[in-house]
Image (cartoon, rainbow, N blue to C red; front, side, top):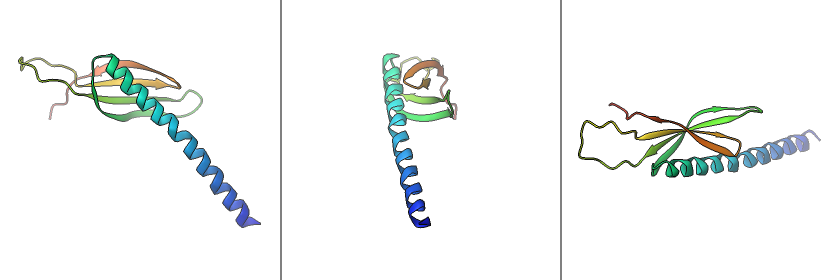
Length: 100
C-alpha cells in the first residue's frame, strides 16, 4: 500500500513539473518577440531573475545581434532586460555592453 502511494506521489509530481515547463518556454518566446519589436535580433535568452508565487515574475536578459558600426566611440546597447508577468512581456531597459 505504501509503495502505491509513493508511485502516485512521484507520478503527480512529474505531471506538475511537466505542466510548468511549457509556460517557461512560452515566456522565452514572448521575450524574443519583444526584443525583435525593439530592433534587437535576439541571439541568446537567459533568465536574469525569477520570483515565484501568486504574483510570479521572470526577468530575461536578451543578447542582441548588433552590427558593428564605423563609430568606435559609440556605446550601443547589446542586451535588453525584459519582464514577463503571466502572459504579458514588456521591455524594462537596455543594458550597456559588457566591458571585459
